[in-house]
Amino acid sequence: MAQQRFDQLLQAIHNAVLKAQELTEEQHIHQLGKYFDDDGKPITQELQVPTLDPDDDPDNMVTIKVPLMSLLPPSAIKIKELKVSFKAALGKIKLVDKDGDGPQAPSLDIDTGGGGGMFGKSQSTADIDITFEAGDPSESFLRINDYLIKSVV
Image (tube, rainbow, N blue to C red; front, side, top):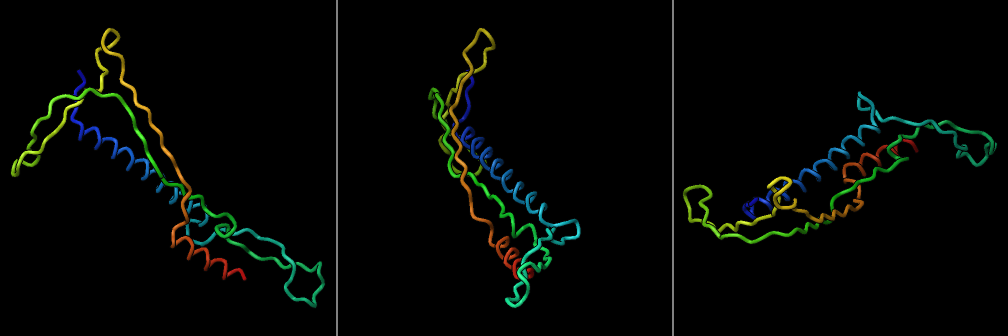
């Protein structure tokens, strides 16, 4: 039997979700690095735009440097929902003393199957659905972007 404590299983799932969220946060930090060089200066793209002077020749162009960050908004993703379903046999309810000083807390043992190799039980399975959603850029990103846009105009 592959018996485990139910609270440990929930804690393992919780830790997996936290790790997945951490990976998305690291992706945001990595993405920000695409907009700034090693010295912290914004990476820019030179563009030719018509002059703003209404009396000037319409074919007269002005070169401006536009920060990439203002041209390509970041794609922020986050975990919206996680669903896990699996079959587990309920075991004994035990009293567990977590820290050795207080009252004992009830703990539920479960059997998720598995183990036994080729001739034992079949491996347990779980259906996992993770829904990601696009999130709004952070407030600091928006403020930096506003500042960079104002520096162009």
